Length: 390
Image 1 (cartoon, rainbow, N blue to C red):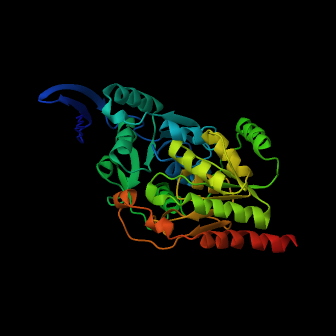
Image 2 (cartoon, one colour):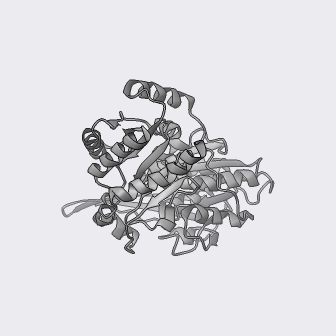
Image 3 (cartoon, helix red, strand yellow):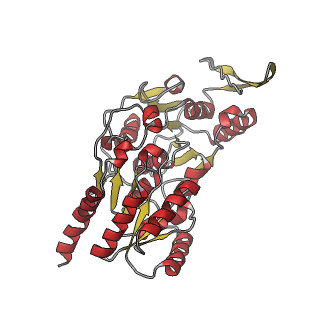
């Protein structure tokens, strides 16, 4: 068993105590490390209101990192001369790297708050950057602790209820969100710096190397210009749809629109599902090779359609403006449906559950989505385009 206790106080100089317990049977060894630093360090006052040093913290979950991009873009519009940095974990960093609105990308390993050495390293890195404003979008202890370690005089997160654990206690300003959708909710944090009703932009840049890689892969698999992407995976089993129905969708796309399908995947379980889909599709779908996130981004950008479940790849496809048919089961549509005119959401029913309950639920709500429901959504996207072309 490993335990960590972080003792925080509101004094100007405070000790940060990290205590670990490693227990095997009845034996236990404890080690502690104390760090004293100025929690009001960084910039006591912003050097310039036109060019503040801003840190966005969204550590984990690829989809949520993508849905935070409109806040980044809005901050850049508000402060063209600002230094804007983002602290995240390595997975999301692959998508954030090279973003035109970002000056600095900082990464920290998952579980960093349990490692005294990494706490010290991150604290030095953040305080050396002298941030003026922190936007803690995640609203958890691990993200709030990073903001607190920065010493920034303004640390903004959500009010309790949206932010959890110790996050509200470690912030200096709390925002009560009004909008149910996470993109607009994240944008509401910008109200702390007088950003109201900004446009929703993602601005994910083209990765030329990844685009060339994708073009080469597609030439090997299928030389047709137009294609769809099917993505059967999801972070939770409760969000997954049946491989057989994905295969039926692939056959519909081939028969009606002459669109071949490429099936993408992220882990070995998803690879098995993707292979099943390809095998059951009667040649309408092919299994994609293992792709990096930048390669997935460029594959989705070049596709005519994305069909998939509520997960990071869906939000990535929507962010690069690919038409999407999103399959929702246990997640409320109003929370994170893809935004835009060329996005469709299919949901058979929604059962109100907490986030923890949704993660542990079965996929009955997804099984209730029939193939015909998905096909109808696809047709509603494509048929207006066919009429315009005629």
